[in-house]
Amino acid sequence: MTSQWQTMPWIQGLQPYQPGKPLAELKRELGIDDAIKLASNENPLGTSAKVQAAITAALPELGRYPEGSAPELRRALGQRLQVAPEQILLGNGSDEIFTMLCRCFAGPGVEVLVSQYAFSAYAIAARSVGAELIQVPARDYGHDLDAMAARVGPATRLVFLANPNNPTGTYFPAAALDAFLARIPEQVLVVLDEAYAELMTALDYPNGIERLGEHPNLLVTRTFSKAYGLAGLRCGYAIGAAPLISLLERVRLPFNSNSLAQVAALAALDDEEHLAASLANNRAGLTLLEQGLHGLGLTTLPAAGNFVTFFTPRPAQELYQALLQRGVIVRPLGPYGMSSHLRVSVGMPEENQRFIQTLGEVL
Ligand SMILES: *Cc1c(COP(=O)(O)O)cnc(C)c1O
Picture 1: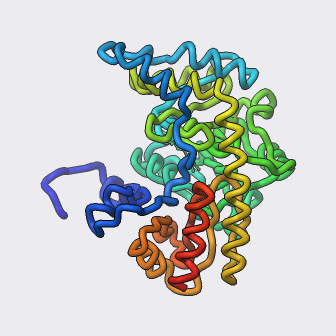
Picture 2 (picture 1 turned 90 degrees about the horizontal axis):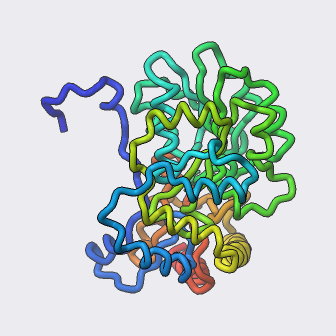
Picture 3 (picture 1 turned 180 degrees about the vertical axis):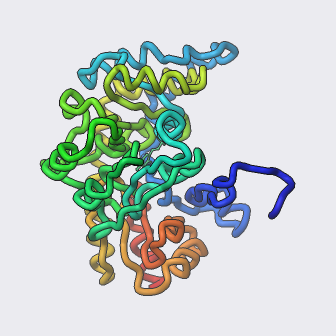
């Protein structure tokens, strides 16, 4: 589609983000009523009853603009994470934080560093402001932090790290992160995306927030979309040094964090039972999926977070379609250049079982 519009030159080369196929779409296209969606790393337990009650109670106030700076939520998060509210910035999902970061720190002539196979929102955010995206080759599908540190140059302003990374599920341990941070010049901002932090159980998994004091050029992002089950409300946040957060505040849209997201996130923080149930379901689901896939003779990437990425013996797109026909939606990874892998998100126990059984049939 050519058009009369004279866009900025870098916009032409962008590809829109490809989300997981929605259930409603599969129903429209194939008439499948009982499909299951294991394609977007959502919390299969959904939104907790306590959160739903908080949202319902807030509905009458929807006629008013939210408090854009989300003071109550920032205070609650600050207490939980042992940082000052001035160190927290709310976003319309953590995705929006990546775009704010790029608006502040990137543009034509600036390099933004990511790993090969890194979460694609970074690339879209960087390229949409005309920055040069540098993809450093992965090692065993994970971030090669040594190579990334070595690639930092005079034009580099931003480095995005996903720990664990989506879609590969790989994570790097504390020692690797510390060695990396020690090598990064102070004028280069390191963004550490910890979207799955609450779900991580590995003992050597580093907590970025504990490293903020020592590294003023570090910014950590987290989200309510995964462990807390609020993906539909779009609520993510960044934690960093107060001067850095105040820079980002300058490009924040006035009401980027909506009123329902704020009350829901506050309620979700207090709902420890739902979080515990989500963690338990996730752990059991990861085990079931990994064992099931191995039982089918398939190789998986090491899984962290709430999904498993596996090698496919046939072209992944073909298997993806065959699963779709049987009402099982998973995620093909073509946009990442991984045409022999599929990613499956942890679902409820019966969904995980149905996926393994259906995959066995189509293989
Ligand atoms: C899901 C995910 C996010 C979260 O995005 P939101 O915009 O907060 O929903 C961020 N980073 C990674 C690596 C993810 O997988």
